Image (cartoon, rainbow, N blue to C red):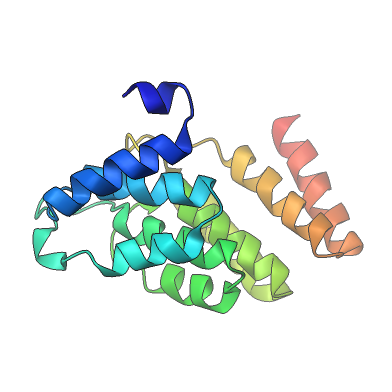
Length: 172
């Protein structure tokens, strides 16, 4: 899609929303509409789109990982609903956690200043691994760096020092 290559998120949002309106079972159109609306800083509209999706259209082959939950989590994160992000991540039903959802979960815990839960889930995700859209493992130092960003933004300098030291040791 040319609009995606050119990063014309307004065009992508319009095209994919129109496609989704024509076929409400089109998960790819919904996914792209939600992502492009998030890029346009329209998380409320993204949530409206996700709420309009009929779960009966979900593919039955989703046994390991689903991006539907991540599409729901991201707008909640953008709106600052960190408790909701935490709750959604804790109830994620499948085996492999998408990297974006894990990152948003850990960052939400940092913003909520839940130090013990942050350490607990950081370790869980690090041990189990997190996965990209192709189902391949994501290098965990990328998630680790995002946690450091959230600790900096949430003004937790002492905890930030700990996570930066761990990150430096991990990447050598």
